[in-house]
Image (cartoon, rainbow, N blue to C red):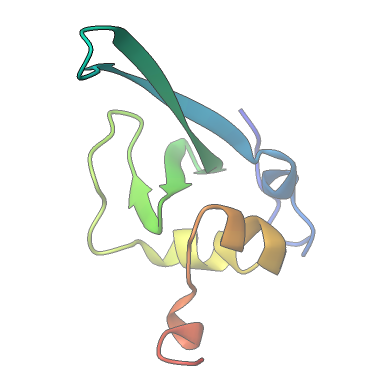
Length: 100
C-alpha cells in the first residue's frame, strides 16, 4: 500500500497505475465459445488508513462500491497525479469538468 505524502507534489500514486481484468464468455453463432478479456486501468490512493480506487472516471472502495460524494482528500491526492495518469483512468478533476 502506498502512503501519499501531502507535502510532495509527486506522489507514489502516479506509479500505481495498474490494470484489472474481467473475462466475458460469449457463444458465437456457430456454437463456439469465445472468451474476451477487458483490461481496465485503475489507480489506488491511500490516505490515513483509507484506500480508494480511481477507475472509469469514478471513485470506488476496496469492496467495489462507488464513492459519492468524493472525499476532499481524494481530490487533493488526484491533483498530485500527472494528467496522463488521470486520463488513463478517465478521472476528471472538478475544476476541469465542463472545459473542452
